[in-house]
Length: 122
Image (cartoon, rainbow, N blue to C red):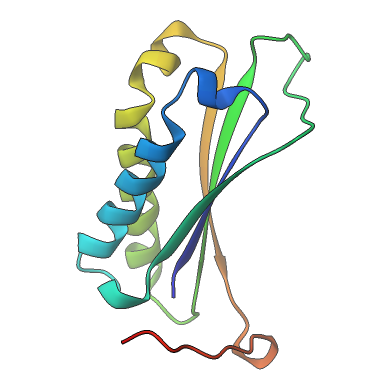
């Protein structure tokens, strides 16, 4: 773990290269030295229906959710989130400069008592 989910509003991919954003966020976390690189999993999903702010048709939103195992120090979690947001901001810079784009990163800790998994990666 961590698992990273890039959720984005309908149409955001027309203004932001979501595939590039997803890969850059993944690589930044994987190569950042804060987590075991072999356990990072990242995917993106578009909302088929979304409302953003005042519902202006040009409003878009990307939310990056990092879910990871508990017990990491707060400074490590903050550094990881800063790194994630920075990677996403680098990709979305043009859309951010044009306005009407929201970009956010959140971190959630998984409760090991309520998380079951089987992993068969080499």
